[in-house]
Length: 144
Image (cartoon, rainbow, N blue to C red; front, top):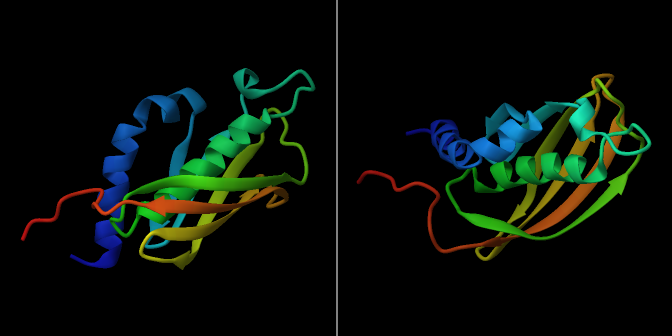
């Protein structure tokens, strides 16, 4: 099995486990490759705050999902240990947001990721840096 095929199988498993939250947010997978993932959502009325902008927690959830998928795409399970988000510009009702996560450094017990969240005009909405804690178990069991 190629690394790309493995990444696709891993993400299929993760997306099945995340089906309820992804459906609630309207979050979809745009692309996956080993160490890289992109997820998208459209800002709907249910996702805006009192200023009529996309709620920051929704933007973070989008980014966190993309970084989890990127980090686990090589079949190494783990969770976000710490993350920092910088909001650059507001996302508005109807905007299509894309979070693209890249594993910048992959170690035995931790990985470091960066995520760019952009709108449909490719304008930067948010930047996220994160550290992920690795577990000593695969996401999916491989047949021997």
